[in-house]
Image 1 (tube, rainbow, N blue to C red):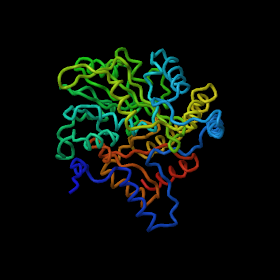
Image 2 (image 1 turned 60 degrees about the vertical axis):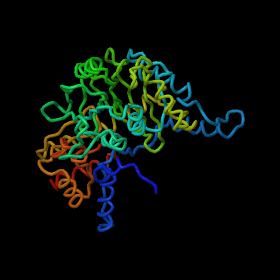
Image 3 (image 1 turned 120 degrees about the vertical axis):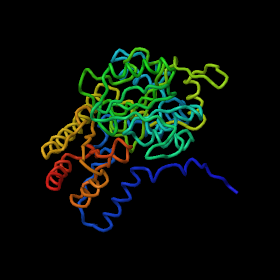
Image 4 (image 1 turned 135 degrees about the vertical axis):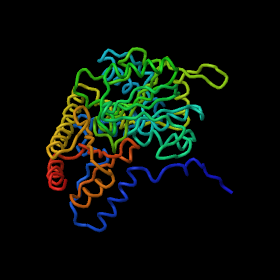
Length: 406
């Protein structure tokens, strides 16, 4: 008889966004004429930038000719894309990242969930709370999280984010093996200063830990004092990997392209105490389970790192940031305390009560979808996340509905 992985039975309820979809589907079934506005899941609405579309077509056309056709590509991605990323994302900021340290993939969500596969099954993992659910659920599936007790898994170390610490937790008092960090943060919109990130790098170096740094929203940073990359911190290349994505940066949520930076200096030890390069392990994992992103998509992605593309994505992120500013301003006007929305596309709103209750109230009364903070962890209760990813016309309409129903 087939035996299943019992760790899947330890997952709590359904995945947050699946549960939101279930409730929204139930609402629309009862209210088929409702003009629903979604400010919940972080999916973009603006089209791909013109330079990206132009290169996308070029990539497709190249596949139509025997002289330029591409089959299986390099496992880590094409040189033309990795070299552009290394120059524009890192060298331009004075950060040394080699193209060989960049792995192209189809999503930062996939990479952040898959990277735990190279950790020991008994590794101690620290996660922020509130937390992007993938960090927790992927470790639950691997059997690393332990048993669910009183709202948390007993083998995970939770890093509490609160209004008092600005939703930027400090390192724990005890050693851990792996740490998930995300800045600008999903869901709270918080950003971390260089000093705060330096404390984490020093902690990881002291305890020989690995930092799994999710920088998917770095394009939204406007404060020049805020680091865009963990590798802006001295010594981070010895203790960290970084996940980046074009999903929100350039509208690739439906096109799919991301990249993970794995420094050559980063090492870990096996059960016999022998040292291994994490780059080698991730390279083996990817070459075994992943066949790369399609050639036309990588052509399109390369356009993002041209002068024209950089100007276009700056305009795109500014558009969503203005949505965030409008949302935060409106919520504060009606008396709600807000966080984020300044260097981030997410506004984290203190609900003053049960977050699922506020979700239901706004859905039923205003036909507006937000994300309940409880779905992001114990510390998310009492908050809702409002996403700026929508058209301006819909955002302004949603704001009026919120004003009238809160």
